[in-house]
Length: 62
Image (tube, rainbow, N blue to C red; front, side, top):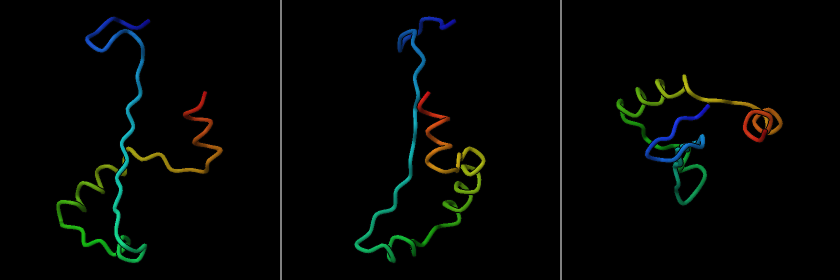
């Protein structure tokens, strides 16, 4: 049962992605992370879902 709230009473999904874009793939892969970046990456990996297209489709496309 959903309770009405300021955003309505239907469930919602919020997805965030992080993108590093550069002129070339090599430049993007060589991004120079700060210590703060590395800490945030380590913490956020706990929330990552990693898998094949089939697995992710099963999880998110029901």
